[in-house]
Length: 69
Image (cartoon, rainbow, N blue to C red):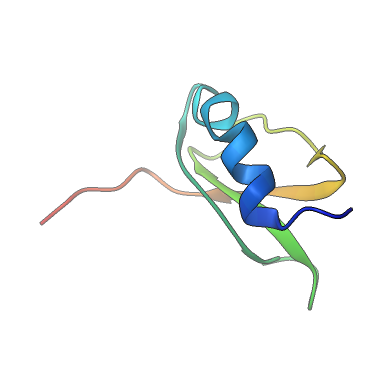
């Protein structure tokens, strides 16, 4: 993998945000595997997300959505 996670996300942002129930996409450390960088997909619990994108693991972060205050 030669691309930075942010570059991979930039190429696949529309695809990931197009999944019903997904409200945001970011990259960071895995909430389930210590020390592993991954693509974080924020979406409704149970939203189906790909296992990986361009070799980078994808993990669902369950959320009921976001609201601006």
